[in-house]
Length: 344
Ligand code: DAH
Image (cartoon, protein in one colour):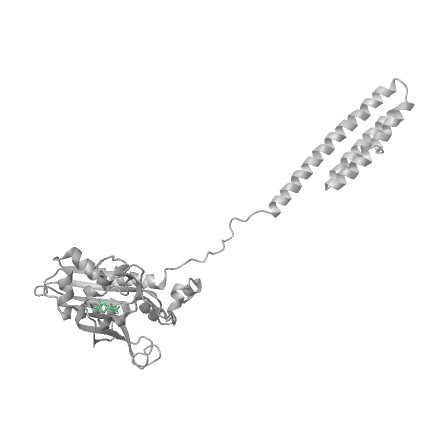
């Protein structure tokens, strides 16, 4: 009997040692069938019970049972420990490294025309000009007649117009009707405003012209305003917009709503007046039209031309942006292709 009890003890120790070596679920399963399975070694010892005397049987049975219970508990603990270790290993292998730098997002930019408009606003507001909003849908009266172009006036040919099915209602071809609205709102007070916005022309769309583009109009009305004021304001503007020291020149021109009328050029930023394709070999780039407000137009605006005078100007910020950023095709501005921003 003592012999069997000793065998059980030995087997138990051996089983415990072997369990400690089991490194994975598979090894544990093998261990289980080796010791506790139907053909296992501990189970085999149970079979010996039959050959024992009635006294010995319960004592030996108890020892074997205790060993069985102990080993079953041990294997369960071992299994849990292994499962925990496996989970720990998986967790650290799959860990998210929160200190990794993120992937940079590509950021958008302001449209080149918007950037140019903001520069124009900054320069003119510093000279005391306010920004005045006026409509994009106009009447023939505002777009032409009040600008000294009655029906049939040949100068209307300078503006290819979008007419609507409503008689008299058109898309404005320039921002010049804006000053009429401003004058009629403020007369007889003095005025200093710029009027930015979109304008529309029935044009063949090419690298140089779109059917919709921007203009910024300017208007100053008051007593004793002279052509010197016009030159001073616009020269200051050109110096700030294009850099101090750029040459400027005023050329005589014609607009029905100003008298005298001029166009202002700066020396070509690309060739320094040597002549190149951008300035069409003239050495100069036209940047705006301007003039002293025609007495008739002042009168339409509600000002007495014998007391008041004023100057006006109009420029194309898209054109300025094209020159500034060296972009050769105005169509890029409205085709919604973000590669444009790589160039500005
Ligand atoms: N409206 C003119 C155009 O679209 C530009 C212009 C010229 C505006 C002279 C003015 C001006 O205010 O005085 O071509």
